[in-house]
Image 1 (tube, rainbow, N blue to C red):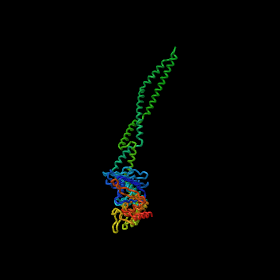
Image 2: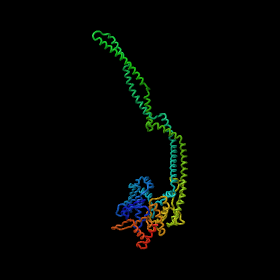
Image 3: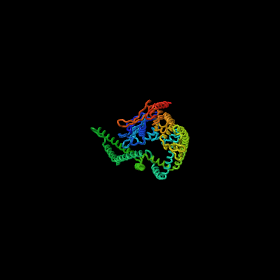
Image 4: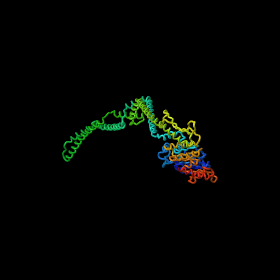
Amino acid sequence: MLIALSIRDVVLIETLDLDIEPGFTALTGETGAGKSILLDALGLALGERADRGLVRHGAERAQASAIFEIDPHHPAIALLEELDLPEAEDGRIVLRRSISLDGKSRAYVNDGPASVSALRRLGACLLEIHGQHASVGLMDPSTHRDLLDVFAKAAPFKAQVSEAWRTLDAARSELEEAELRARRASTDRDYLAHVLGELQKLAPKAGEEAALDAERRALMGSEKAATALKDATDALADGKAEQRMAAAARALSRVGKPEGEGADALSKAVDQAAASLERALSELSDAQGWMARAGDALDGDPGRLDHLEERLFALRAAARKHGVTVEALPDVLQRAEQNLANIDHADEAIQAAKAALAKAQNAYDQAAAALSERRHTAASALDKAVELELPPLKLEKARFRSRVDSDAARPTKDGIDRVTFEIAANPGAGFGALSEIASGGELSRLSLALKLVLSTDGGTLALVFDEVDQGIGGATADAVGRRLARLSQTAQILCVTHSPQVAARARRHWRIEKRVENGITRTGVSTLPDAAREEELARMLSGAEITAEARAAARALVAASQD
């Protein structure tokens, strides 16, 4: 619902802030008062075509902003996300646009910059304008299929088609991938076989590099220990140490048994020295034995270190070749095996993908056919319902048709149908597009008839009708007013009208008037209370001079509108 419209410096409007309520609001005023300016300003905010001629004389730019209040499920919410625009706050969307004297335009959505095309898409989603100079929404053929689907209550059918389309699209992609893999296979097979042969021969294992490197470091440490042990062994290898200690022991044995003063001490010292030499000879022998055993322990495969170096070099060279780490080589081997297997089974994969595609195509065809049947059935019902509304709106000679063209050769995510609303304005005339009807009033009344039929099944929150009463009066104008009032029970209606019968049916009445202040012409809008409303209706009935009869007729119109 449109809840507010703010206008700054648009033609004759300097400043105007309107709070707009639900239901039916009539806009009246003398010819030239500026009713079209109000619609031009609204169109500016909605992203419609605009030029610098909208800028009020003496101002630098014209600006208009429209505030809409929507529910959480309104399609505009998804459209904001699709267009990457700021989300609605507190259920409100603010559309704002300005145009300067140099013709440059700036657009904003929820105070964030936006393109004019984005503004236009949001505007069309939130409000429809029907009239002589603007006719969007129903006049746009791209909306007709969705409108028919709402009338047909086809949402479950559309969901099935959409899901079948996604499955079909995925199946097509899978077949394309399978065929692409097969084409690449003929080129890649020899290379993959070569890679696989190399890697299978190398047989890399997870964690192998770390284990080999640790063993290599250990062996390099063992070599240092072996060198030191050899030096120790070599130092004792000539036996000179044993010979000298043995000679010393023999010499001590010749000392004999001393006599005289100090003999005991000497004897004890000699004995201790001899014992020490004996122990030293024994320890030396033990040391040589332990060194021999240590040497045995260090003795291993003399080529082991070279083998480790060669293995590490081979692994790292392979890793560089394939642009990976050594740790990732087993994965490269596994992928090569899998890719080669895929190549060997490429035909099987293609056949499986074709079977899946055929199944998906069949499911889509069935879902699309069911949706198409639903649309054809609903189209007939919609045509009858709309044509019942045409005679009271002075369109009794017109015929309406919902044309559903089905083409299974051109499927889409929305099915196989193209829907176009068409009209034959006169007997004997052929059907044509709605936009080809010459009269703006006829366009508006036809839109009213369509909206009346579609309103029970949902629709746009806000509708603007301009000159819906063009070329009609009396009973026809009253019929238009009644239908606008009925439509306002499910939609917000703003109607620019010259018909007192239409205006009398409105819940609120705005008068648009032009006045001159200090030599400057300005357009303003005022909300009419009951008495002023009757006076305005009387003016519309009688013209410049309001008669008592006109006032009485105005009161009668207001009273009749309460029925």
